[in-house]
Length: 364
Ligand code: SAH
Image (cartoon, rainbow, N blue to C red; front, side, top):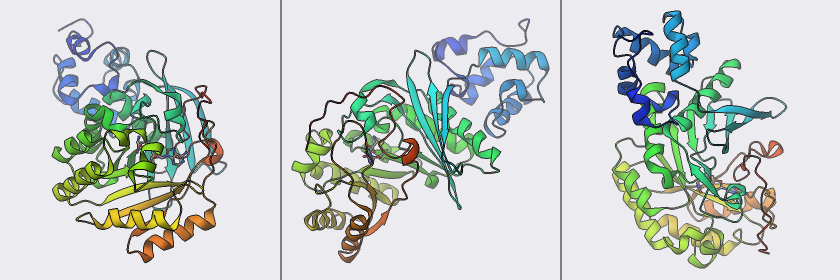
């Protein structure tokens, strides 16, 4: 036994110097506590994941051990800023990461659920012109611990309002399926340690086909959301550049395979851009794509939120509802997504972590 009662830090070394407290899985924490009685691991695990506690606040552990754990299990996220809507229903957090990158996460309290929107990368390499994260470019991948800790810290905030986080959407900064291993690690941890049900976890993708296939082979039936925005290749390649690599036919095939494997609802996200993808012909094309799938897809309509590098406006709300009705009359399930947090730049596509945004796009 070492002087402080912890096994040597071989675990931390193998996890890499960036390892934060939520990067350790149960086996790795067990190795760290190898010289301790077995029940200490249960206390630490439930302290971190059920009680959302700092190691120093896990009062069942001896004080010296708590202090030492606090040292060897550092936090990954340092809060830089927090903004909240006046009623506190939406809270946006800005976090500083080891190495200097910054990311954002958003807590949304609804009447029937509490949702955290997490980032999966610092920045994003997908370069969708209408998205503030895409405009700022890619910095680095997030680790499992950095993703999980966003949920834990947002859950602490929710607890202040007597609420429990029920849903997690991987829709913050970054492309989740370009960091699939870490995202899946986070999914498993949130499912097994935090106790969130797979049907309350949603991974949103720009349409990375190899990632969708990989997700289909994973054991838990999480929800898949595909950011479609256009139902013909010419327009989609313009809006979502990765469409040139994975065009609609290939993407739809991957979606159909995912549905067949998981039997879960698939949703398509469609940010309505004034005069660009909100015409009758767009609704007709979209309905054709939806009908081509074995299970009906659900379409989530979002009026495009303003971002500094994209001049075209979102469709006015009355026409957003018209588009929704057109889809319904074509037999497609569609809803208009409640737009949360535009006033604090916490809404879809507005997360940019306070980085200066290059005003490069001259489109329209
Ligand atoms: N990279 C992933 C997840 C992050 S974006 C993806 O593309 O799905 C989450 C959603 O917000 C996506 O559907 C994205 O297309 C959408 N979005 C991006 N910019 C937006 C904007 N300015 N207004 C509305 N939605 C936007």
